[in-house]
Length: 239
Image (cartoon, rainbow, N blue to C red; front, side, top):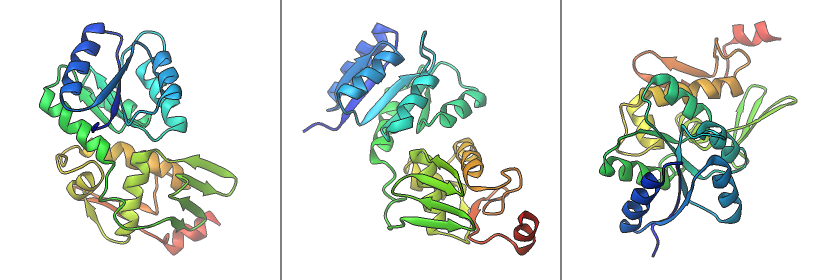
């Protein structure tokens, strides 16, 4: 029985060969693509459970391919890159990637990240919550959509999972480690920069003024809290 189907996207044929051998030995079915364009074509032809996507490809870049994949698919995406700057991580997560692994990577680390991505955060979905109202903002978790008057935007899978977990614990401070492990899995806990990127993206979608949030609040050095109602002063100033 297959452990899942993985699409490996990299312009380096040696990396594709090594990844195919490694992943096949772990019970995964493996497809590969040499470019972002070929990856999009293969995803249209055949469903994959996870995409391992090189960030720095010629032609259609990994970032551009990630955005195009994420526009109409919830498939797991792990970005692979030789660069390890915070700016690159921000760019990858902003584009909708679920995770980010730096080359050269150790095989056990990559396999752990793959297992985490394929689990798709069961803890965050353990309790049913379909709808969230934040003042004039309506969040539809099933449709992955935020509606604010005429403005409609979609949530990425990780944005959805983070917001859902915070909504399940509304009014309470959720520590960084708890939130990371609930959404990404038990092997996580120190990747606070992941949360920073996702929360910033969420604020752009649910806050009238993302630089002065009234719903998605930061508790410095501790974690985040979802406040279901804005303070009276904020409601008056926006009316």
